[in-house]
Length: 283
Image (cartoon, rainbow, N blue to C red; front, side):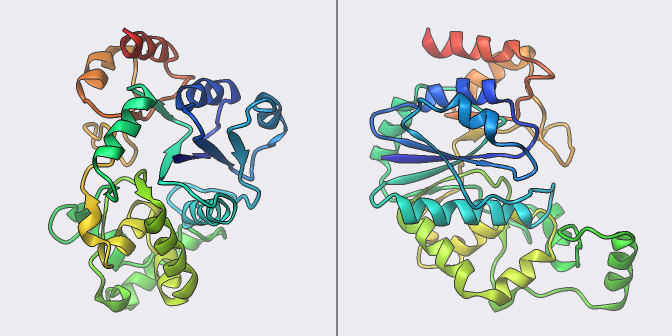
């Protein structure tokens, strides 16, 4: 059984979410939706009123780009899922700007063939994902909202030495979206709950959602479970802080990726791409 968790935080479209979640229906799988607290949940609940497999995360957070609030939204959701769902095999973390490239049945077959694995990016910031090192060793006030915070941030980094990760942990990551087992989710929740020093450290990093969860597992007894493939096709070729938004011109690239999901999509930029993917998936 898979529990899909969709973090909906960037102007999500209820209708597009319905389309995506329809593709995730499979046997007794569940879908949890964390809707950013900045948005009214009423319309979303109406859209899914007749969906027995869909639940909404109750402890919602206001999510801001590159801030620790994304970690809080994910952590709160993990907590609720673990409290409410007694037995499940995998937790599949998605965003509302993702879309399925393959039938969900094939994901089940793949995970059954690779039991106990955690599919997540785990690039070392010191040797492989070096452009992210400054996110960790410098102070970042992204999670705070007050005038002049970036001037203060620059002053702090000028005065204080580079930061050191608690416990000399190896920091790894890249994309925050992943597929892990229940035991991995339990370990992540327990680690964050019981290590306030770790939380304080990551609250002062930039976009911690892209490496906190991977770092926790990588520095644990579950390190060998990690497969450095998050089963998602994400195109960083434009060299920006955000990945490329796919359009109809990318259909062959998406299908040839041989991944189960892809991101990033924006219905306001190009909506035809969803029809093209559906045609390819069902052919």
